[in-house]
Image 1 (cartoon, helix red, strand yellow):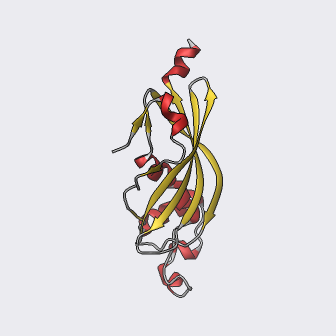
Image 2 (cartoon, one colour):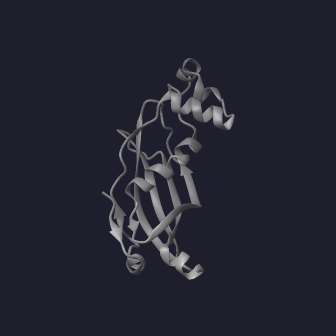
Image 3 (cartoon, helix red, strand yellow):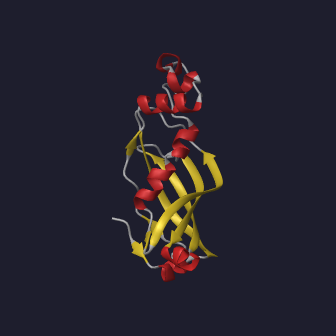
Length: 160
């Protein structure tokens, strides 16, 4: 269950650690679909026989596939702000791919809110430190500073 906060409470959310997301399996079908969508068909992602002969021992997810899943993983446990009309991906300040994600493994996100900036007009940018974990693996798959813009009802009221 996502925690709900008021707009007035947003300045105090910095430092808050949010619950982890659910585990998500990274299937070969998902990796192949991402390869088709991005035209990145490098064998390490789509050819299990060839990938088995590499140091990875199997096909691995594209780093950008893992990154693209942040939209789902982060929002699953992100705070809910009363009066929100929409939440938008506002970008990333830093991304590092630490450990490959083997096809068939499961990932989840852990996040901590590090900043909440009032941009005026009912707009807030929340920065979170996100760690994408791989089940049973000590090293994380990815570390990122993810930015989410929250647009609250006060924006539309001010625009009237």
